[in-house]
Length: 88
Image 1 (cartoon, rainbow, N blue to C red):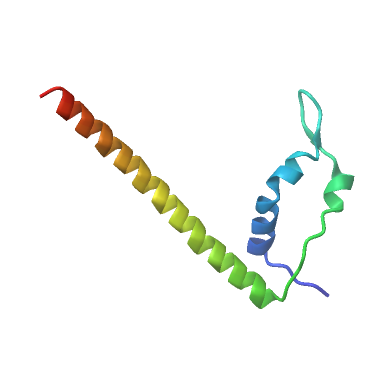
Image 2: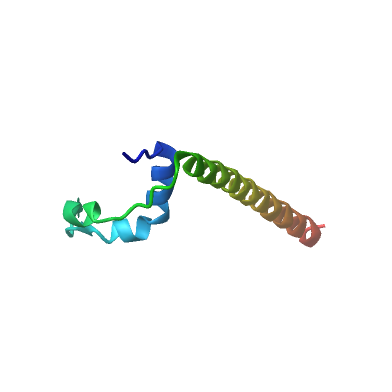
């Protein structure tokens, strides 16, 4: 019997979101084609490996968020500097 952690499943599905989005049909109201969704083959490594993947993903995702915040702050500082420099 295979065991899959919720975190690992979430990460796997999130990493395949484009493929999953392509499974929706309908112009106004989107419906998931459940037959296609059921055909997704999810590799299930040992639970220890799943947890390692989830932990590493979380660390990397946190770094990405921190970097995005830093970029936003630097953009604000840049714009403030330009305004100060131009309107002395």
